[in-house]
Length: 309
Image (cartoon, rainbow, N blue to C red; front, side, top):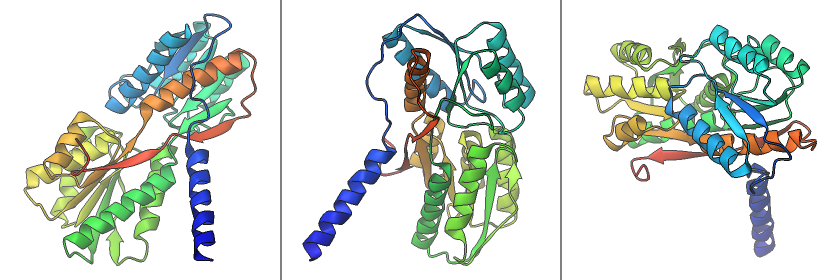
């Protein structure tokens, strides 16, 4: 009986992994040399640079062109301008990581009405798209919360306050991360302080984290690359090795902060996979396929001092 139960559980686990795996893996063939615009939240974070590199590598392999048209900072008005420029440029498809669910929706609607095919990577808006490739952010945020609890337990800390540094109140991906994080800590004896926002800027995040440290927090969660970098830098500057820092995204800077012990871990996404699959999906729909608005989880892993290398 036990062996049968074990076999069933193994099958369920395998099925779950298959569902989470990207649905497009092979190189695709474009019917024409399509023009694709790629617009992410900004052009600076290493997360977006990695996504761009994944998209460009796939475009080169498939014989299409991808133009990276992202703003220099996370700003709704600047992202809307980029979208409008893509429409004016006559692109066949638009791959976008929306800075806000609502603020850029008007511009995206105009893009779709002009005949462009819309694909989301990382962060969707409130406009129907052909396909979406992103992290299950709430689940990943929950994992971040579990890692925070694990690290606090290792230090023998069972109570205290925890701060959260997020981007803003309109970026759905990071809001879902925060929601998952809070759920993981609910009822665990810790006081989760009011969230502070840094607009993804590492310097602003560091100032916020330093203020949290002044309040005597036992842990801080940075919900994206900039927030995590600022959190790690603040803990480093404080010299307080009892405060647990947990981040989100991956970069060389975050790897260094983990290796040096200033962050306990970070939730590492797969932006290059998002870029690759986004290009493949754009080609498929331009070739005439119907992807049905499918949402694909591109996965996340936990980077710690043990595996950060």
